Length: 383
Ligand code: NDP
Ligand code: MG
Image: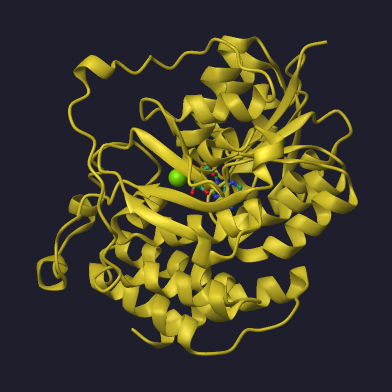
């Protein structure tokens, strides 16, 4: 039987690359969801013929319903965050690939896991904001989380040898360093949206590209790795690997280090999450070592890039502190993308939000939503 995939965030950078993998593998698409881009979603519907689609934006959703009304073979159209969650829960959803950006993806991750579906997770914010809820849901319903983030896919691939996985001593989480690697605070002041959107190695959505420039992305990924692989944060070392060829490494008890390498192409980790435990030929090109040039390694500068320091503080505080860091960051990045705050303000605001409370203890989904709302309000009150 052909594999069936429900793809959330289908119109984005990961979403469109996922559809390239799905097309190449001949998988069936059970459902597609996006925020508001109904033009692209409609093209995807015509090619992949899902039974259900959903749009978060209610106006865009109604417009799509009108366009598809009476069209033979048209999918059922669900609206709003609840519609996306309903779609993720459908019994025939298959593997749910969550490529929504931001905390907006959390509800659907939980819904899919609660329905017993495996989740291929690109939406790292699900684990950062609600890690305990996500892990509990997966365990309770016998569902699996399959990492799509390239570093976490690399670590997952390095851990496939089950007996030695128990002897994991350390994770070496690689970072490109982003467009501003090597710069100091005085050189970062005045960096614009256009400067920050020029990533050296990867082409991604705007939010994660800014997160790469501030190193918030590496902080979020550190928290993501804590939840996915069960190591304490002090056993996860960040290593700057400027060329983005080594996607991460693991070190075992005997100090043997295993790395995963490949061209910087997200279709490789996307495909592995969908074909695991098998590996199949795919659309990404091979790595030509004879043309590669030197691979370099550096430390990350937390003094300059305060978002990374803030995420480390947040995971050490525990509870909802990572959620507060994430909410403050989502709000600050949105302001930066509208040219309303300076680049360095993002780090200041995220760190201040993390420092503002203790955030300890357990939490419910309602607590996560409330913490996110408060972190966003904190940012607007401290501009
Ligand atoms: P994009 O901004 O390119 O795409 C985001 C997708 O989410 C779009 O389909 C968008 O729809 C949809 N969306 C936006 N808001 C909502 C909402 N409220 N409800 C439902 N859907 C929504 O982001 P990326 O593809 O770059 O990133 C997606 C996720 O993957 C992020 O969590 C990111 O951190 C992670 N990731 C991305 C990588 C990359 O290379 N891009 C690498 C590793 C991880 P619409 O187009 O209609 O707005
Ligand atoms: Mg990554």
